[in-house]
Image (tube, rainbow, N blue to C red; front, side):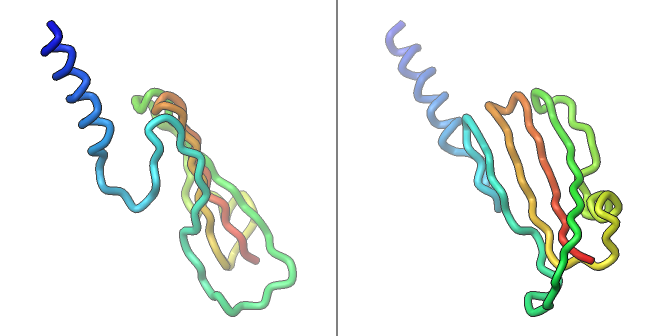
Length: 106
């Protein structure tokens, strides 16, 4: 029985520690990050930026719904020229996740 428990714990630790390669950081218990996606023109001088957001959600990694595209964020912010885009992810234990795209532009 002791050997079975030891093997089970070792398998669990290996599964959690191995993870898949990803270009974004992911926490096993909580992910709450903001990252840049794109930059249209780093040298563009803009006085007033419009902001548009789009969002999608998932539950239990079984159901995912919403439109978190750049196009949806542009439409929501009445933006025709994109200057830069940020991305935010919040996920707790893989149970509930919210993903948001924020577009800044004119």
